[in-house]
Amino acid sequence: MRPPGGVAPFTTPADEEEQARSQPLEPVLTTAPPSLGPTSPPTPATQAPPPAPGNLAPCKTAGLNVRVIRQLGTSKNAPGVGLIALRNTGTKTCALSGWPAVGLTKAGALLGVPATNVNKPRKPVGMALQPQRTAFAGLQWRGCAPTATGCKSGDGFRVGAPGSGTVAAELSGFSTVEQKGFPVSAILVGSLQPTTTDIISW
Image 1 (cartoon, rainbow, N blue to C red):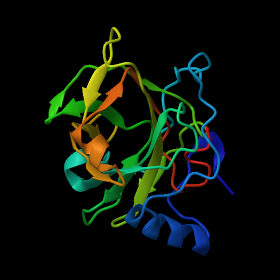
Image 2: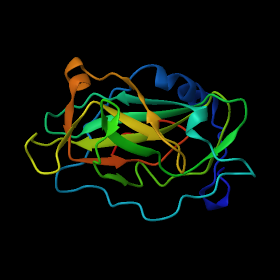
Image 3: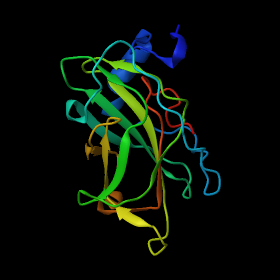
Image 4: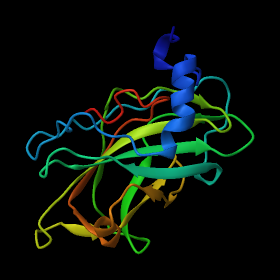
């Protein structure tokens, strides 16, 4: 049972532990198209994230392996979808809570596309991220006409732990065409969660 206040240590049933360890290795296939449409984005998150359990130091991006795993969409007009995976590569448990920092890049340079945090698939929980364990967040980006105002063509993302710096994320599952550039007008960032359950179902 989760302690009061939305704080959850990074402990799960055996099947979810196995999922958390193995999920980042291959892209997760979307079983249903995301519900986001051009006129119905999720409401931006405005609350502060809950505290992580214990007196742990916050996770720093330098101590994480950062990946963005492309998800397969089912609609030509659906937003782009990715799974962010943050794995603790250090030797100590660290605290993680909230939303990862995300920015679209081209040849490593940030493009200034706006990114909005949302409470999807649910509000964030405070986690004690143990060594070699992984936390996850959903990611969506809106496509656009290349000549439209505010449209930027990116070929990657910089991602980091909340309140820390960002690094160039390892990309997995992106097509050869996307690796050369894909148009983006806005980014939605889901909350960090200890498992991939419903992580991109929004």
